[in-house]
Length: 173
Image (cartoon, rainbow, N blue to C red; front, side, top):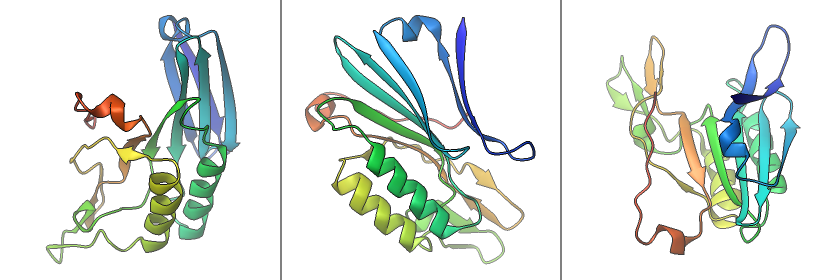
């Protein structure tokens, strides 16, 4: 079977969620679901004899830079120590990190470096403090009438020694 975990915003707005196979959950001794920010940020904390794994589904604000920065701060404040759990943060971040993450169709130009507040806070709190790195996927995941953008991403703070003989990436569905 499958276990469902949800965090809703309202009847008219969606939220974020996670579907996990029961057989996967059985590999851990305990799990807890925490809604860090209703409908925006949640975490499934899995703990067992072989360690911990925290899965963070996210749906950051599409309209407010300040709200996205606050969501990033909440994720950081609630991220477990890297020695007690590996964390994977994923979802719709609704901001771009690099120049080539957004393409303006009408102008025929890249414009992905316009979300500086979010990018700066992410780099300071998540990359530097918690050692998160992106699991690369190069596809544009959002298309509107005027832009293509890569706003859906996955980050993991897996220790560098776990990455020495592995290459990890992901693909958009």
